[in-house]
Amino acid sequence: TARALMRRRQLAPEAEAQMHRVAGEGLYRSGERTEGLRELRTYIAAVSDPAPEACYLAGLGEYEDGNYAEAVDLLDKATAADDPAVVQSAYLYIGQALHHRGDNDAAILAFDKAVKTDGPDRSVREAAYYNYAVAKSVGAQVPFASSADIFENFLRLYPDGTYSDRVRGYLADGYMADKDYARALERLDGIAAPGKRTRAAKQRLLYLLAADELAAGQLSSARRHLDTARSYADADAATAAEVTLLRGRLEAAEGNNGQAAAEYRRYLASKTSKPNATVARYGLGYALMAESDYDGARSAFAAIENDRSLSAAQHADVLNRLGDIAFAKTDFKEAAALYRRAYDAAPAS
Image (cartoon, rainbow, N blue to C red; front, side, top):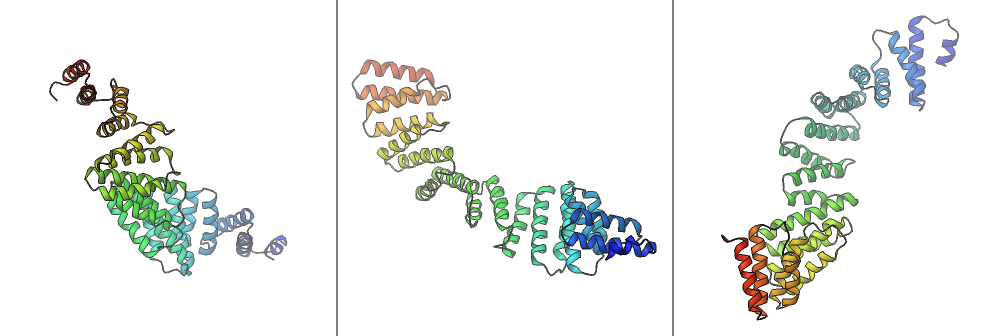
């Protein structure tokens, strides 16, 4: 109807501008975004005080086209609307546009206004709060603990919301960077349907948590976390191999040398790059010595006898253990030679 009126070319300029507005809003809301945006631009250019609702739709169009400066200008005019739903959504998109432009401080203010506007759409407020938290953590130079409080509060408000699993991921990354592995794991455990990336992150966290526990002598907790880590073996083969190596160290710490040797061998047989093969052979040598398998122990230690990644003290220790094995087999000449080399490798040790 508006277009039919404009074709008559008998309208006053003010009336014609309003018909461009009617046509623009009708087209935009019907899904014909490009045509609608063209009509709305014509209307806005023709009047000195465009209607906030028209500015809102035009602002959305500019935002979707990536014209963020124009979007902010139009959406700012839309915040004068009487409809709180329009005002709240306008502030949300202003914040997103400013965030895209890298102006996070201004974006935070816009998201904050969207959160505080009493609009009827719960999902808009949730999106605003999510964006507020992200902008706060990315844009502001604040410690993780400060932004963690915002994200944790978001989860209290929206435990099962659209963005809740993303927030759990943010928190897990932050806690992991702070080496708070238990809290990071707790957040990832809250994700209802974890994908492969999340499963790999859980596997890595379980491994790191178990490593800390093993170092602290908390062997039962370390075993429990390593058992769980093994259930994620398909998530990342490299981490799965390191879990096996750590399991070998745990078994050795508990005096289960036969089991420790089996774990070390499983690690060495894995098809990954095995960056800690020297550690595995070192542990294997000790486990086999404890089991009186001197031939196997000698083979493990001999494989790293000239490994340049060993410190002087470690090199001396390997030679010393080879000497012990020769001594146990009554090859005293060989034992004496190895002990001399061990002494020369690190006299201070």
